[in-house]
Each structure stands twice: as C-alpha cells, then as structure tokens.
Length: 620
Image 1 (tube, helix red, strand yellow):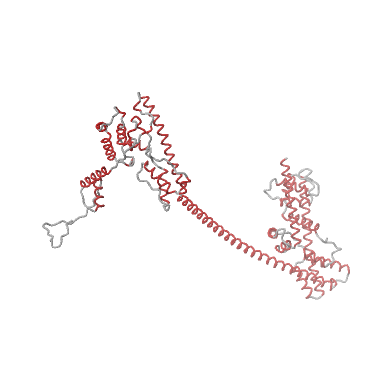
Image 2: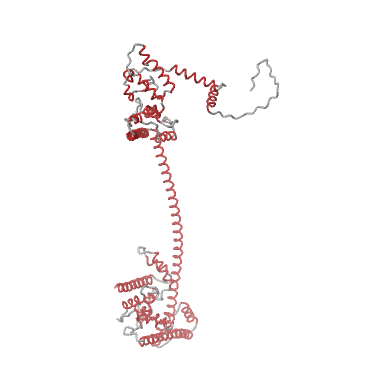
C-alpha cells in the first residue's frame, strides 16, 4: 500500500501498476504468534524482533527474580535429601511448581555463587569434607527440579499442598467461598488444561452439569513414585530388583486409589451442598409434577368425554326403548280395546239371539221342543262367530216368524252337521290308535310295550316335543319323564319309547292331529270352571263372564314369544305385573297368562327332573 502524500507533495507513477488482489493468508507456528502480537500492538514487526523482545523480557524476569533465603539450609542433612523441600533449598518456596526452568537455573546459579564450598573456604569458613556438606542438598535440589520426571514426582507429594476436604457443615454455610479455592487448588493435578470453574449462584444448568461431569471423570497425573521406600538401583541382583519394583507398584496403586477417593469425596460433598443443584432438583420436580398434573387432567378430560358419550348413547337407547315400549303399549291397548269391543259385540249378539228366541217362545208351542231348542240356541251361542251371529240376528229381525224359524233351524242343522263330522273324525282317530296298539302288541315288544292308552300316547307326543333332537340321552330322558307322569303304572324303557315313536310316525297326519285335539279337550275338561252339562246349560250372566274372561284356544308361537318378552320386560317387583303382561299379549287375559306361566314352570321342572334322573343313572 502506498503512503499517503502530504500537503504540497505529488505522487507520480513511472510504470504501470497491476491491480491489487486480496489473498487469504493463515499464519501458523511462530509466525502465528508474531501475527497475534502485531495485531494486538497494531504495529508491523519481524519475527526476529519478537524473539529479541522475548529474550529481553526473560532477562528482565531473571533480574526481577527475588530469592527467599532458606533459614534451615545449613542444618540440612545431605543423607536425608528426600525429606527436604527442594524449592525452599533453591529459594523458590514462594513460586514452587509455577517456577520455570530458567528461574530454576537462575536460582541455582545464585545459590552456587553464594554457597559453593570454594567461595566459603575463601571467606574463611570451615568446610566439611566429602558429601556431608549442605551444598550437596543444593546439588540434589537442582537434580530433582531440572528433570521433568523427577520434578513431577516431587510435585505430586508437595509437602505444602493442602489435601483437606471441606465438611458438609462448612459447605452449606458458605458454599462458593469454601469450595472454590479447594477446586482451584486441586485443578493443578488435571491432565486436561481447560478446566471449568465452579461458577456463581446464577450459573446455568449446562455450566453446572459440565463442571460436575468434568470432576466426576477427573483424570489426574499425580503419582507417588517419590515415596518409594526402596530404590531398585541399590538392588544386588535382578530378582531383588523385580521384588522392589513389585512392592513399589503396589504402594503407588494404593496411594493412587486413596487420592481418587479423596477427589470423589470432594466432588460428592460439593454436589450435595451446592444450592444450585437443590434449585435444579426442585425445578425438575416441579416440572415433573406439572407434567403429571397435565397428564392426569388430560386423562380426566378424556374419561369425562367418554362418560358423556356413554351417557348420550344410553339416553338415546333409553329414548328409543321407551318409544318402542310406548308403541307396543299403544298397540296392546288398541288390541285390548278391539278385543273388549269384540267381546261386547259377541255378548250383545248372543243376548240378542237369546232374547229374540225367548220372545218367540223358541218358535214352538211344545215344552219339550222348547227345551231342545233352548239347548240348540246355547250351542249356537257357543259355536258361532261374531259375523255368523250378526247375520243370524239380522235374518231373525227382518223376516216373519216362519222365516225366522226356518233360518234358525237351518243354522242349527249346519252346526249339528259340523259337530257330527268332528265326532266321526274323533272316532276314526280312536280306531286308528287301537289298531296301532294291536300292531305294536303283535310285534312282540314285551310286557312293557303293551297297554298304551290314549293318555300314554298323548304323554309320549308331549315328551317328544318337550325334548327335541339333540337332547343328551334323549330317549332315556323321555322314558324317565313318562314313568314320572304316567298314571297307568307301566314302566317304559328307552327301547319301548323308540318303538312306539316310530309307530306313531307312520300314522296319518290327520290321526296325529286327532290325538292332539283329544289331549287338549281332556285338558280343557279337567281345568274348566263350569262343566258343560244339561243342568247348568241355562244362560246366565256368570256363564257369559267366565266365557269372556278366558281364552281356551291353544297358544300360538307368536303369543308365546310375546309372553316371554313381557316376562323379561316386567320383572317380579313390577307393580300390577300381570295386568301389564296381559296388555302386551293381544287376545289373552291376565288369567290366561298366569295359567300359561304355571304350565311352563311345571314343564321346565319336569324336564330338569327327567334329565337329572338319567344323568344320575348314567353315573352309577
């Protein structure tokens, strides 16, 4: 770069100058050091000038070095050189391990000029001959401190070093004042040069963590070879030298272990007393508690959402169920109203028919014919449906007496013909049953296979329907059921039951229906409130009430399903339970439902008893 022209001066160019180009230069080594010094001083100087400057500064330091006279120097025993303080002998007790080699050489030079035996002898001082003079201690101190290995061994056991570890009580009161100098004092043993400081109370977590991580993984160069009790150079043979080396290694390892335990105790004590660690732990605990609380609140909100969704679903399902129940109840009420209306209409038509016939003296003048006609009228009331009764009443009301009598007799004749056909069908079924009995008796079925009466056949059909295919030990269970409920006293086996069931399967379907019809009529006769006889055939309000209350027709599959559903819907503790159940089953009264329920209970008990009997028999 050209110098700036002063006032009144001119700048002239004699040759073309190339354009300047900036080049990146990175100084290294001694040139880097020179670069730093030039930059810090803002001047340009050569490396030679810097070296001369460095030498000058070192000479100034040597001139400024102040030695401290060791008062006990002349009293030292040269033979006990291991226990002497080499830094104090050379007058460097105030610098110690920080002293440079030049300072050590300068101190030794000064001590030689002052305490050399020739110097002292020339001054008239009496000198001890041989190695017993204290000047030997100065020579030994220079030998130890000028060798880096020997100097490190002596520095490791520096007698002025404080190995003390503060107690917890001391650290809790003034933590930083107590532990900062201790860590600074022990940092001299570190192999690594960049040592983190203890810091202040406002240090960050990363700084504190870095500090304790360094000291928990502390790498110390301190070794204790200086304290070896035996010197292997004094050994007389190789074996003795090996033994001495072994003893020295063991003692060094033990002292090294004690030193590392001391450092670990120091770090543990500082960590337990550090107020920053306590603060960080409290902050971490508060953070975890906050996270735990937030997690619990989130879980609680999730549960509340689930609970609200579940309640909404339950409410929707309840509303749907209530709606369905309301529809079913209204349908049942409507069916009940229709049923009651039909009952009232039938009762009204019957009463109208009886009144009409009674008004016309049953269309006869003979008393015997009047009684017979009265029975026929009652028969018509029992057999005819509502439509037929209405048609008959209209015919009786629209015609004269002769026409009415003809219409009545025609209706009576039709009913009698129908009853005659039913009677003939019943007789044919009985004959078929007798023929089946004779056939089975002729087949050699044994004593127990004979004597199948109508009651046993009906009981067999009932048992076959009660215990369907797939029932465990089906035929043994059916035989046990018949033996429990049969009044004939004949004991049936499974073989007898199977044989008879096969015979019934070969019968005509009409004959099976006839047998079932007879069974139902027998049941009706046994359970009827008012027997159908001539003595009580006179119409009465009581007769009509009984007929209107009960429905003697067989239960259909649909009615059975409605009854079972109603029993589930209205449990035992429901008020007016049977009234509600009868409302849910159109066409059936409270009495019909209760009666059917008892039949089902008895049927189930009988079924269980038969199965248990067969199971117990099989176990034996």
